[in-house]
Image (cartoon, rainbow, N blue to C red; front, side, top):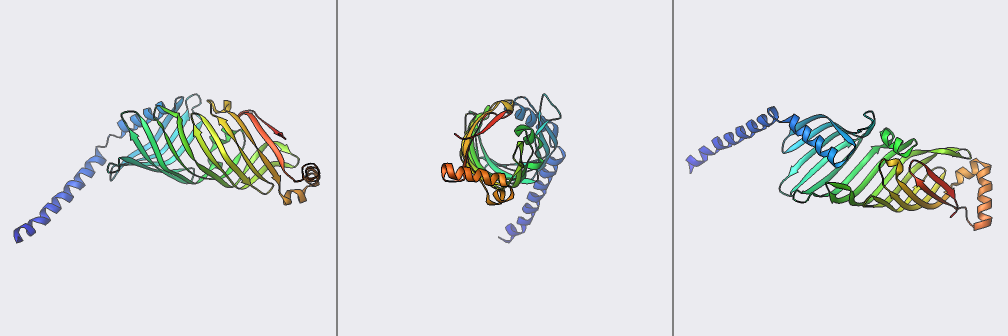
Length: 293
């Protein structure tokens, strides 16, 4: 018995030495270039018309790939960065047969768990969460919407689809934007932008159609409730939208501008409340906004 006890430390040292040696070999001889090229090719196949750029890639223990400065770029315009990740880590969890993904995006954090069936290409993303994404820094989003927008995005959702047909998958969740503002392309009386104290949507994405089941925003000038659909197309400016809802001017806006006071008086006489019905339709590049409906 004592002889066995004396031999245990030797095995322990050998195990630790072997583990350290294996880790060192993985770091020194890690095939960075091959893995980088494979990752870029895969991303570009999933998102046609784009180029993937990876600033750095390193192996982390245990079973983790750490990426730095990952950018998705418009192939037709190399200066147009669609989205930029400051960091991205992918950790394999063979026990639960999934990958844990974490990273940083425009000053915020995100995470999700990826399940992938290699035989048919099915992917499932669960626990997808984003916190405090600074959309004021997301310049391609400004171009996508055709206006300046600021604020902090939080989101929670799940996704199921196929690796070869990502936009034909299904996602469901909710997103909020707080402490921001959105530019108006055409001023409404004295307003050139709308302040967003707090806004949110519940959404369903299925086969290229984004349905806003319930949406609201609360700001210094307006409160609103809305719903509608987006038919996603590429380029994004061709996406069709149909959104309708109710807009309520706040008391502070009415008191600050007599013209809004006059509008409130007309609405109350005609409809019994200071609520403005609105409809937005057309394309994302050329939306049409009108009151009524």
